[in-house]
Image (cartoon, rainbow, N blue to C red; front, side, top):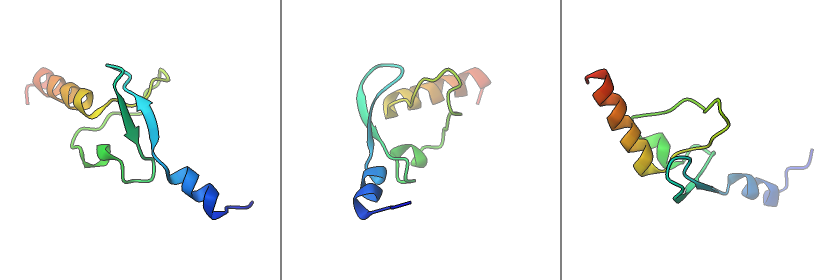
Length: 71
């Protein structure tokens, strides 16, 4: 299998996504340097096939879940 430098750079480039909740655009890096790795709240991989949330929606969901659990 040929892993030329151009293929590796393509794999490392961030994906442009639309938030599954609000539709706003943001980038996601699967290389371990994505903004969400620094967040204290993490979601499981969605079973329904939806994709990531933007920073604002992830934080909003974290607040809602914290309020619901009473913490």
